[in-house]
Image (cartoon, rainbow, N blue to C red):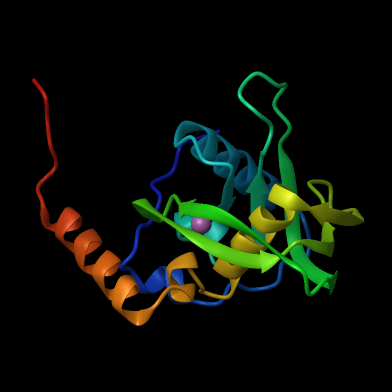
Length: 174
Ligand code: NI
């Protein structure tokens, strides 16, 4: 396993559409292992492959609480089969949009069909945080970030600030 660099906004890579995975093989499993390690290392609860520069429709998540046993989840080619119109609101953040958070409304429940780590077809009935997290990650597969749901003004402001953060040289403490 290896920790990969997480791509941050603004970066065109994050805006590309990820491609369907034909077969879950060794390469995809290795990618999922790396994604999970990268996500844990960054203290995130979800990561899409495109966030480490791989345009494949693969997501890893772990929404277990700190004091709970780790519960990694893997979704390959996830597809929303059903969602309800009722929404829930969470304050979302994203490893690709560091240090910014905003409230986003999303369908409260959704059924998602996907292939698991072993390439087996599965269906999950997601609710609450799980539903929101899956939808946030699935947006990444379409090149969509949570800031796209904010007002143009707010989005522009965030991207501007992120660009400035990037221009700064790396900080070293010696
Ligand atoms: Ni994200």
